[in-house]
Amino acid sequence: MVNIRCAVTNCKITNYNKPPGVVFHSCPSSKEMRNKWLQVLKNKCSMLDWSRSKICSKHFEKKYFDSQRKLRENAIPTIFTFSSNSKMSKTDSPIERTKVDRLLSRMNQAQLSSDIKNTFNKIKVPSNLDIFITDDLKCKPDSPIEAHLWLLIKKQDYLNGMLTSQLARNKKQVETLHKNLDEIRTHKKDTEQNIDTLKYIVKCLQEKHATLEEQIEILSAVESR
Image 1 (cartoon, one colour):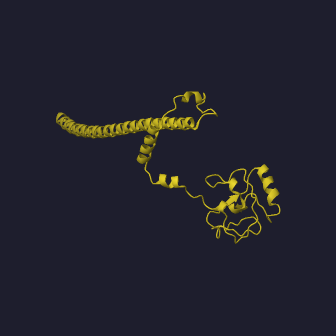
Image 2 (cartoon, helix red, strand yellow; image 1 turned 90 degrees about the vertical axis):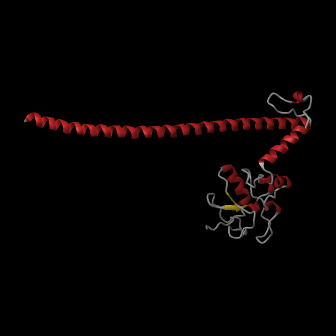
Image 3 (cartoon, helix red, strand yellow; image 1 turned 120 degrees about the vertical axis):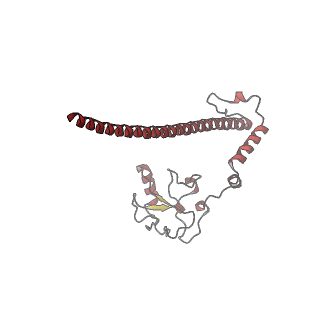
């Protein structure tokens, strides 16, 4: 394994001793971001190779990470006030799943679909929903939360219908392909049988031809006498 070390001076994090949740990030490729990095790292790194140097995630604030703990394009290392032996900060800890995430992971597709359908049936559509909807199918800024919620539900329900229809079409196409494949196999089998029959006929004709040649030779011999 190649030894990777954080380029920040006095940071002892390597790929061999990095705490859980800490990852290494490559330097930016754009000239603009490199200039910004240079401004904050000029006194923090003894050497900075844009193509090889790595900065560990302990030097980035929480705001520079997305929900998947990926570094944003505008991220700049700004944290340099901890020691190499300090505990990992909260910003470096792995994102914990919420209670909703844990419960959702325990449900199968049928349970989720049934639960969504039951919830959908309990929510009543606002009688004046259309007045809150714009021509690009969005709620107006002053729309009540019920309108936003119902529009979202309607979109999801419509999307589910589209996916269900697409699934049915795909299933029908698969059935058609299987049917065509069976027909091809049957046709191939019939063709092979026809070929075997033709081979047998050819063999019989060849045998008859050989017999006729023998008879012709015999007749020719008799006539020559």
